Image (cartoon, rainbow, N blue to C red; front, side, top):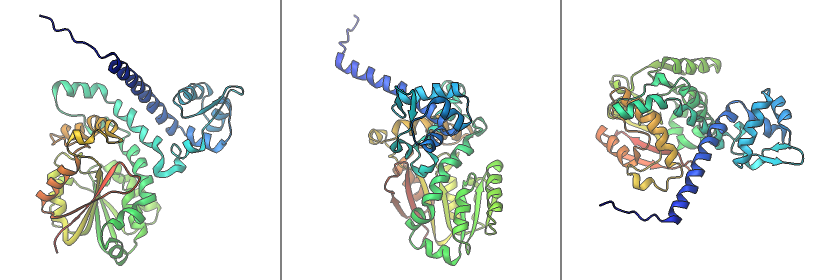
Length: 360
């Protein structure tokens, strides 16, 4: 007999409204990414007053027809105000404070870049859903550039004054002069920011991407930093033959093919009494505890479309970005760390700040 399911009309209508919001928000995110990349938010904030699409396009050096259609998306998304009597558009200062490069770490438009970046591998990802495996780094040609921009503003604003002081005694030791390694350094901006702030210490950036390391090396040279260097290094192959007084990782553990091997190598490479600052995604390892996470859908989607699948592409564990604090403690403890403190920074809903110390 066929079972007749009685539909709750109110629940169905509410879900339909939610789906419409998701569809609108998804496409708005895509348009926000474009607006960020071509500088339209910065341009409109600079104009400061309502302006026509032609005036905005001229100021930005862009094609007016495309700008006009983009403005339509922004007006209907509630991001840009529209003055119908003048056919003019304005970016409210409160919105500019969260969508322009001048906003620094508060620029959420910066993160919108991850939406089209992840969507660009959709066909490959669908194949992996059906057959397993993963999408390799080579399929994300803009990944390092986008991540460098996203993380760079945070490093500039908070690394020296807010993040490093979370490690007890770190600032004093850095000022006196110690050896530091940043594992999975990407484009190396964190290395250079630290090297500039603490000239008596020496800093080594390690990554397996020669292209990313070249960016870090070029920046170090441009800044005249004699205490920063970069080397090609598989994070899972740290032997411990060379030791450091302090080590750092910034959102680098969860997408490793073998995160346990990486953390084991970090433990081996720390000098006795040394500290490891691990900045990684703020989440629980249990999905039910992430239901109220303010960026839950965003982070799970980024994980599925990049972090997890990249790890699987190299026959890795595929932890994913939302591996969570419980799993992190398990991995760190297995490596030998028995002093693990977890910190959060007010206003940062993206990351946990783990401070792990090796016994003296």
